[in-house]
Image (tube, rainbow, N blue to C red; front, side, top):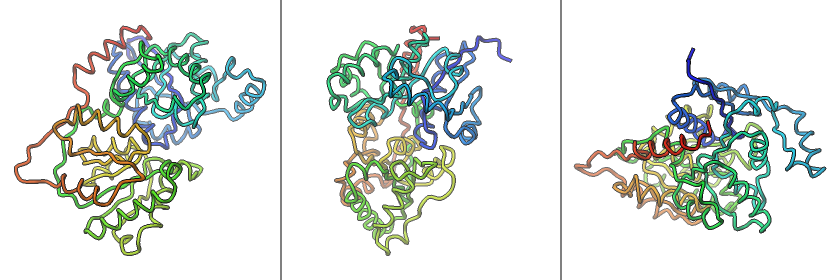
Length: 402
């Protein structure tokens, strides 16, 4: 039994059928334990699939997976209809699990742009509840965009919400200027995505490129329709004709099989557009999905092309040449930071192109520039060095949130 004081940290809801969310949770836990070694930290994660998520996170010490309570949806419905939801927001799980927390950690990602022109009211509710209970809030892995699409009143509401966080750690430097443009700057700092806490450096793989992994997401279909899938199918047809093997790699699934969320369904749809001749060179994913299941499959590839941000970061931190298919600004700003910083000596290893505009010739050129040559020097990019880590740990300690 540890003689260190115990502190409890609660995470905002993350859907662990999204491997990116699992990465964020794991990276944030490691970051917190590195930042606060003087405490025994216990973590609370909430879930609609508690048994599954307990299995996914079973290797992590001192973590509690709390199930959602079905009848809470009716309580919340009454609050919304009566207009009292902002003042009396309540979580979808037993409040005692929230009330015992010493710190709330919101993990950012895309949560502020998912509502498509509206506010993500549930995430604002988490912070309001924490503030009401005197529990400080911090945010990791934040990625903000599309604030300008909100009506002025909702922009102001969001800015006030963000201002109540003790600190917001954005995952690419472009977000610093972006948020400053809305007056959110005093509590905002840059720190790389939580995956870089799990994998702070990597060794660049220099294997001949024969097998290529491809990830496509329902978001691409929502944004660009079937033409983007036809475009990627034509790229696969070209790659197969050139002798490459293709593996389709999902990074998100949905327990209910929603075509709006599940990469497996999107990849099945993509497969339907691939020519019969090329289909013989394509292998679709089967089996369970979690970070421990998918990462070895990515590690067996020679190159990766992906639309999900964390599928690309997963591949890149495993040393694979990675082509980011963008459907928003976040892929471009991430690649810009990587090429200007950690990957400045290996810029050719990553590239970014619009998911609705990438051409076969562009992909073939990217493959060619990453084929190994003679006398290549081994390189090991560092994404989070000791000084960067020590500086942010000092910043976190100075906040006095624990």
